[in-house]
Length: 219
Image (cartoon, rainbow, N blue to C red; front, side, top):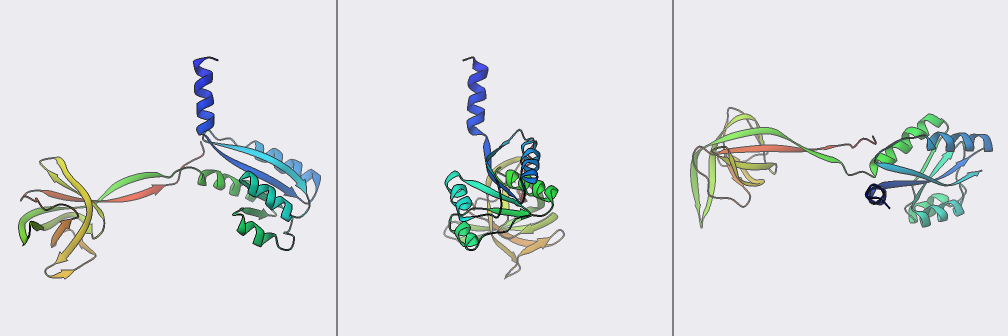
């Protein structure tokens, strides 16, 4: 085996795979659906059709799906009595539709759901430390002026000093005068404490971030 073959084998093992059981009302539809599914292309998720059949979705289909970690696709078919309960017990997903293109879209959604979402941070606000107040026992709170955006309690934040991040954590305390508040907008003063940090200095910046989950694409 070449080095390329070795890396290809490792990549294949790491790749996600959605296994399917396909059921349809007639043979022609079953074959057409299986063919359409096999043409879904993805660099990140494989598609493996382990069984194609005709007729309603049965308890045996669910048992097979549960054993193989598969999803059942039903086109123009119904569920036999008791199938829904067994599927829930075995944690088997059943997708039914009477429009083939809708089924294909839902299968692509199932494939994408196997991928880890991308986490993207965006700056939502910043505040300048104007004064540091001691709370005793080494605790301190930063008296700030919000200079941009919004500072949000429990939001992710970092303390920046001379352009360098000196601490990261959640905002554990956010006050307007003596009142606890959920957020403070630009142009207003507030008291801030970032969880696990008390060594604030005048001129520090406290920057708040939002973490957004980006849905991964199949390609």
